[in-house]
Image 1 (cartoon, rainbow, N blue to C red):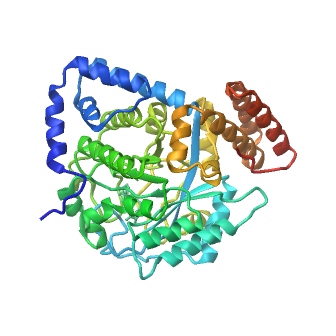
Image 2 (spheres, rainbow, N blue to C red):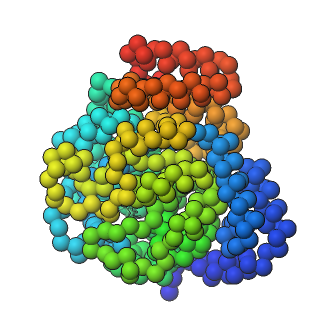
Image 3 (spheres, rainbow, N blue to C red):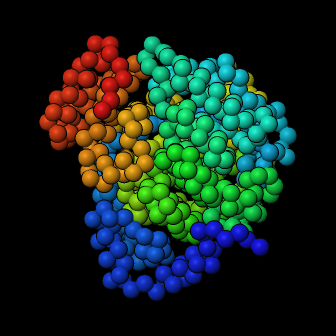
Length: 464
Ligand code: SAM
């Protein structure tokens, strides 16, 4: 007997069938609504998902571009993952950390954490996502909290890691409180799939098999005071349209219960990994469908950041950045100790999955600027207490522009001086000169210019 949750499989399946009968005029009205930045509810999203009308699809793309441009401008927030432990008690059919897979597992010592962080910082990263497999005996909450303290305690000549988002398995209110107390940014957890029969099939054994417990993780995180949570699904496990509706219903559930939905949504797509075979997964998502999904999520939740990782190729990243992605990783390793190993060129342990964009952080960031984007290393929001509904209120009022853009420009100036070569510095100067006039508040523009001058004279870490 399936435990009743706020995700009702039959309801979602019927919605997708009924949505096919949505009159064109209704779909037009949904697109009008999205164009006014009012977002969409899951019923409206269902109609857009199943529409194959070229006119509607073209308008979805155009509206996604418009929202992206108006809400996020050219800014793209940069981050990198840090894998601390690949010990795992779960048997997930898609994941190389599956406890049945035999390989030499590894958990970083605090010294090794420092070594990884040193390398990440030398790449210019200021924001990381800390990731672990699930194994309470080896990788307890104490260990995770210690890693976070170790990382926050490290100071370098050019700065430090200033925001740690955490992606660890669903856990208890008490453990979430520990994460809250140590000062995490966003608590990230992918539902993997909202389709319960598929969820139970791909999670063959282990605590992660419990669909309801995993699904209610953010409820417990909120109860513990964590109001910045980031959702996602692993596209490729079940019908992608079903997944989008699951995500949106989850978002609405959090909005209803806690007054604020997802701070970010991640859109990982299944990648080849050691010990799994892509041909065993019948719902792999093609590029066209994936781009359509990203654009529709952009319309549905215009103020929710969207995260893309190095799972995607360079071409796909370029395409999706236009449609709604606001945060990407660069220079990533998905292996425990992977940054240090990359430098020593020795290979032990499994990457969690194989990345598709393995260029250096500097080349990805540099190319972003060639494409007209402004890479941002901003970590200000949670440090300024702009989390949960406070962030959303600011975003919805449009005022966020007077905060995010200045922070993007000061952190880009910092990055260029500390990590860029001569060509990069020129590009950064040009991007800053281009974007500066678009800060509408005169006082903030003046302050940003002053702060950039101070950065040039050796001061660091300005944010508003
Ligand atoms: N152990 C935590 C949990 O249970 O959610 C953290 C998960 S893991 C470190 C981060 C994410 O990698 C997973 O949630 C999953 O979506 C993703 N992942 C695992 N195998 C993958 C694959 N073959 N391709 C793409 N993403 C994968």
